[in-house]
Image (cartoon, rainbow, N blue to C red; front, side, top):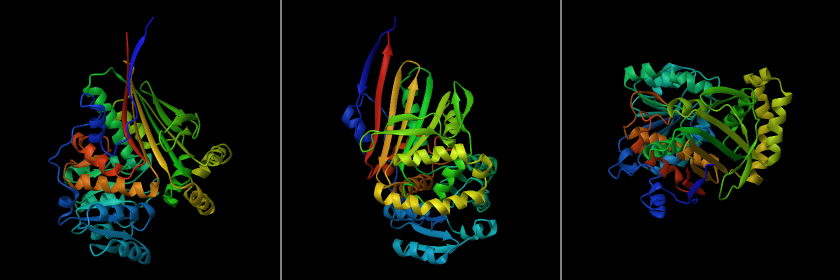
Length: 424
């Protein structure tokens, strides 16, 4: 009968992977080594400019603020339809910012706004039924591109532009927010560590997310949530695609310090497919939960009572958003905007490892995460083409720690843990 000898290194709170290594010892190489030769954010910003499409929204404006804090000398162009909102955002940024009025449905207008810009950030969600006009304009104008899409449909459409982007010499990354985005990199770090230590075969990868209410992230995020309730949740089990009803198969997951145990449910999120394909993990799933608990009941009830075709209708979803958003935001004021990511990796030899990231304000950290991706692309290490965050052509292995360290600043909890069992 098999027995197990288990060794565990507990949860280590740290703002950077370098601190983790210092606390648990260099013989536990839980993340990539620091490349001390990488340039600082201030050096990146010198004579550079970034265009944020959808810059007047919650995600876009917080990205602008985060870029301004990281790189005060970076020129930030806030782009949107509403000049009044744009002027308000620009007023918070200072002299190195400006507003550009654009129509995301007009490629010509977008191309004009990209003149003399080094990078365009597409934050104009919801993305589910959006065409790739911003990406197309970026390729035509030979401008680097990232987006904050959390839609699998949009990510798949964006990936079809890979060859065009390669031919034009344009580097582009899709799904560059906090989750997906930072969560993809957390998974990539866990997989890389397991493979570099010659562990057994990769077996399973689980993405778990928790957010209080909307997390203050705005109407676009809420609309995406309703769209997801109209999709079957795609998972992978031993290499086979398996579909479940949306918001089903509840698990109670411990998100660690500041969050504790929370219920999470299956959703059809883009990182499941990208992690399965890129990281070559045969079993992958993604779950999400919200608080207070009655919001989970509400979302579960919607999946049972509202016809699927209604949840795929953009007009009906916008009506649901208009009706529910004021109520949800009122509750957000009481509950806060706390969020957490937990990624678990299991291997065939009993090696289990976890990465956790938690922050008190989703609306703030999604801007910081997007800004970190923007700086990574400006550093020039992203190859031409359209990539997912976990693809090394998008964010190279040696650049992951710098990006994660930038995001971890101000987090409640930012840890990578190692716990493994060797069977005798």
